[in-house]
Amino acid sequence: MNREAQFLVAVVRRFLHSQAVPPDLTGLDWSVATGLASAHGVTPLVYRVLRTLPMPEQVAEELRAAVEAGARASLALSAALCGLAESFEQHAIRFVPFKGPLLSQQLYGDLAFRSPGDLDLLIAPRDVLRARDVLLADGYRLESPLHWPCDSAWLKSRECEMVLAAVPRSASIDLHWRILPAYFASPFDRLDVWDSLTRTRFAGRELPCLTPEHLLPMLCAHAAKHAYARLAWICDIARCLIALPDLSWSTVLSAAARAGTTRQLLVGLRVAENLLEAPIPPTLPQDGAVEPLVQLVRARILAGRSIRTPELELIPFCLRTFESRRHRVRYLLGHLAPSWAEYRALTLPPSLYWFYYLFRPLRLMTRTRLRRTQLVA
Image 1 (cartoon, rainbow, N blue to C red):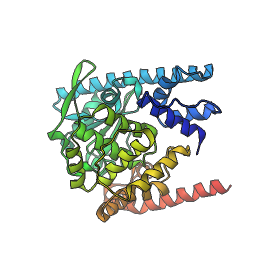
Image 2 (cartoon, rainbow, N blue to C red):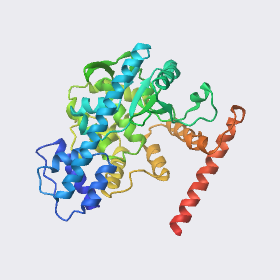
Image 3 (cartoon, helix red, strand yellow):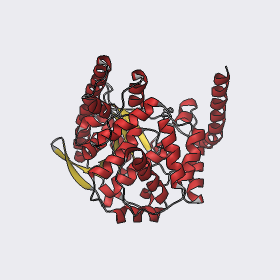
Image 4 (cartoon, rainbow, N blue to C red):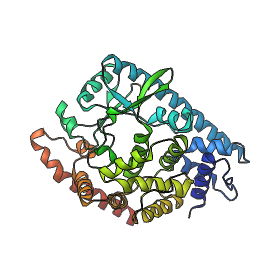
């Protein structure tokens, strides 16, 4: 196990549970520890735990500066979210923020407790192109590559999203028309979040948001899609369990059972319990495939491995989280579909779109060979 990774997990556990054992600072390589904290997206939590403990003055100053920069970025994202909300409401476009600063407020009660990222908005499919046009008129620019410049090309986005950025760049907006891509099975295959939204107060205005019974499965599914590689995602699951103790477990579990994604949910809950002592119900369903997956995640994080999970590890892991052969086939077929990387590398007219399905495996094989050659060299 990696000393700095163990330390990081202990710090986050201490943030969540004030009675937990304080982290041991002896023998740390501070540059490695702070680098890991940044990569895992937990620098704000680390600073709040360590600021009362003896640590090198330079490290304290670096952490403080990073947290202050993150807080400023979160405020900028919050302002952007309020501006988007006003624009969308004026144009009668339905939307739901489901990550970003709103999630920080829901789970932590403080915008600065999560590292800033993008604004992720769920848009009703029929409104996606209108939402894009509203953002373009507001000064944003498209950053997602297209295989061909036409509106229908968006329907072929494998990730079911488009990315726009402010000019000058101060916020990045991800417009989703599905919470998870179509190739990745989740409880949202059988859930219509639009029928059960709630509202919350944010920055002086009311915004739509997911119910607790939808928020927890979303956090587990998103983390599963990336093999729980970032400690921040696991912390969000743990914090959801702490901050929302009254969620209806019967609703959560029945939705997962209907979609055939109970294992996905259980792995997220068990990982949060194993690493961060999150409170989970004592009567969860049993699945013998869950514990080996939990131990894989635990070992990878405590080893201080790279945050970006290689596809040769990610794909087998995700396949093991699926309960049915149908979901595994669906996932594999999804990985054969062309991505933005193929669109950036090659522009084809709609009549030749089929060629991307041949070009993608060729590109991936070439990339893999180049990486192996570099490693050998």
